[in-house]
Image 1 (cartoon, rainbow, N blue to C red):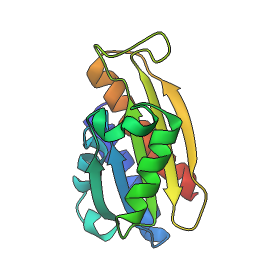
Image 2: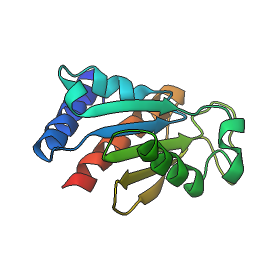
Image 3: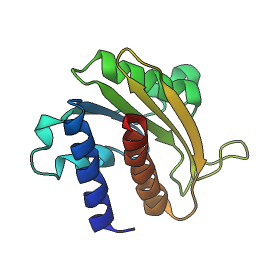
Length: 151
């Protein structure tokens, strides 16, 4: 999947958010702001994208372990509290090439989606490929998840 696919996916997220009069926020770790970059590449995204947070160091995510369900839930809910958005997506994972373990191998990525006044949902994925491939797949899943949560 190339840049064109990400652009189309981000544009679809924008259409879905606009249709529902919702605004999103991102809280990213292993993707380093790539989700925010993908959505802000879409003209007019300021109507449906509030801001993005990049929480990258392990120290910033220390409380529950850098890559965990509890961490992404806190990231998503914290992003909502600190923004004017209605829906948040958060991502934390092991993109590689180093940093993996038996418990959390390279490609392990946690996601959470939270809606203001609603339920927070999370999921764990294991992606294959090099660092860029893992990160790209995580961006795609994050955007797909926003659409799924809205529909």
